[in-house]
Image (cartoon, rainbow, N blue to C red; front, side, top):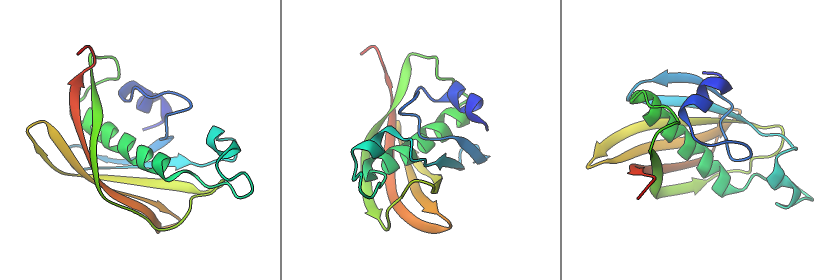
Length: 146
C-alpha cells in the first residue's frame, strides 16, 4: 500500500500520520508498515535538539496506527465514516533503543484476538532489524458523534 491507499483507510493527516508505506498485509492477521524518520519531523525541534530522538509515545502511536490500518483494511472500511478506532490500552510496553533521524522504523502489528469489540494486537518496531519498541495494544471502535 502506498501513501494514497493509507490515506483512504486512516483518518490521520500531517503532521500526525506516522505510516508512509505498507509492505505486507494479511487480512485479519498482520500488517507491516514503514515510517521514514527524517530530521524535518516537527518534534525534533524540541525533543533533545542537541541529540534528536523520536519520542517514545510517537513510536507507540505509529504502532497504534498500524493496528488501526490492519483493522480498517480487514473490515474494508474507509477513513470517511462515523466511527473511529480509539486506543483503549497498552500493556507490556518496552523501549530498547532510541530512534533517530535517518532511521527507517519498521512497524509490525499482529492481531491476537477480538473480544466484545476490543481488538488486541501484539506490536513491535524495529530499525535495521533491531527491536526498538514493543507493546500489546488494545483498540475499540466508537461512534464519533457520541
